[in-house]
Length: 217
Image (cartoon, rainbow, N blue to C red):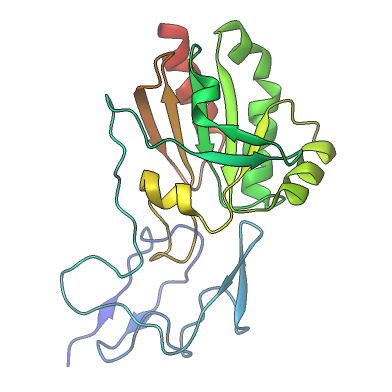
């Protein structure tokens, strides 16, 4: 029987190259994602998995994946979420100025911390471009408050507990739906999306791409 080889570039730096029998699922206990434990660390984010979880054999999309609902040139669904101080903040509060809304997996994880600090370090450039910055994850307000204080983040962090807004906006997940995606949207002063940028593995690229667009407006 022929075997299947997982390409090295499929999941960069996460999975070793393995030869798999078609009878085995990717998440079988014979092939750990990162370690032999039931919880693995990816970019500082705990990922739980079960030996019973498998990839569908059909050509249909992987269960749990979320596909883009918000497109360039459209206005995204409105929301009201709590910020790091526990205050309700609505998307409409940001109208009148260009707004960068970035969804990230979790507070304190290495990739997300690097991204948050890069936004912090370029915050004056965003202000000069007349833009506002808003970060959104599923962490609660107290986690956001500690995260913002620890790294001196000067912008708003919103708590999307239950990931309702993430789902409403259609932010794609990574690692077969196990990891919340990292996606950035640039809205113009009228609240219309002008850029959608997704890159899980190069968090600082989000800042570069959004600044390029804002400085061209």
